[in-house]
Amino acid sequence: MDQQKISLDLILANIAAEAEKAQDTATKASEVLLGPLETAMATTPYDVVYEEDRVKLKHYRTPG
Image 1: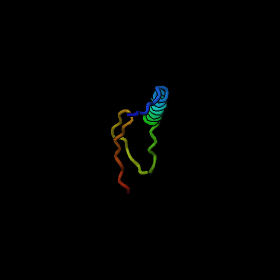
Image 2: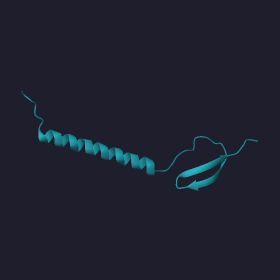
Image 3: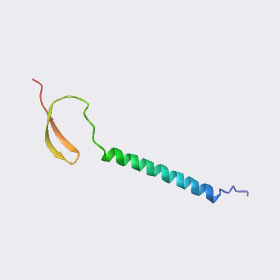
Image 4: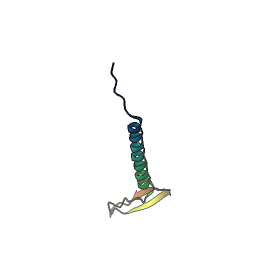
């Protein structure tokens, strides 16, 4: 039985490339999660009833 052998250098290069991709993904995720929260999509008036860390409980005013 003739089995193909993969060189150790190729395996280590692939592991290093995957580790770099994972680090880039984790860096981007932390930038998104720790960055400013931009939710200003609509102009409906509201009052902030409760706020903790980045979470806000909003009570929207009735029009009129």
